View (cartoon, rainbow, N blue to C red):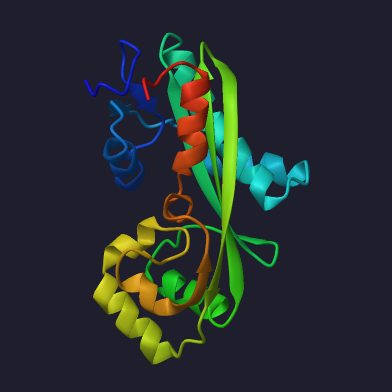
Length: 205
């Protein structure tokens, strides 16, 4: 187990996201993953009734993921995380197929949007830490031909991204400006997470 991580059990990530797992491992944390099993659309519907704004929705989703896994493993430190794409107040979801991805990129083309990434740490079925960060991106105007070429180059992995882009790959060609740290854009703000883990006494550094 990495020397930075002090608890006997590994950090339990309430997600099967390969991107979030890679971020945590790159920071020297000992991590296991488990699907939260929550119904995200049901959580979003309830949040809409409460009129939660997009940053609060991201936090609610992160909380619910962490709590679902923490109830199954109350002795573990559980991390939930989620990200909401906010385009002028409209919440975007992961596209179901290439046609939906193309339509989403056309809607984002030439406009700015925000990515709100939130995290939650739970122990014993209770949220003990919450954190969030936002990134702001401006997509350049794109023709349908450019979008089709991008989707050909990027492949089916873009369907795993709420923004239909992977900034660490071909997606960087879609943008005019990006404001925000890399981990926030990838869906897990590392700096506030590490600060929260230090407060809980989980890190030796």
